[in-house]
Every structure is written in C-alpha cells, then in structure tokens.
Length: 79
Image (cartoon, rainbow, N blue to C red; front, side):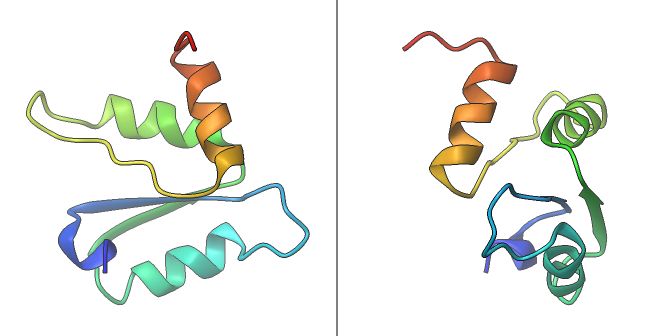
C-alpha cells in the first residue's frame, strides 16, 4: 500500500536469509509506482534518494530493525 502512494520507490537488498530480494520487491512495487529502483547496498539507495529529492519531498524508510540501525549510522543519529 505504500508503493501506490509514492512517486518514487527504492528497494534495498536486506541482510537476512529469509529475505525478499531487492529485485523482487521492486518488481512488486512497480505494479503500483511508476518510478522504481533497487539497490544491493543501502548507502547507495539512500544517496540516490537524497540526491533526487526536492526540498518538499519526504523520505520514508520502512523495514526491519536492521534497516533502522543502518539509517542511524548513515545519518549519524545519536541515541
């Protein structure tokens, strides 16, 4: 339901043996969102999203606690 409300969707390959690959996630999102990208590396995905955002855009992260911990590292968020 998030993809059909998004103008752009970025999928990232998770580090999890029970994962849905970034490509599979992107293929599913493409049914609902016109602009879809997928990455093997979260840093590349975040960099790409940030570089392509307009000043009024919102970047929403959805996923696991692993993903949240990586986002904290990328943005140097103190606990």
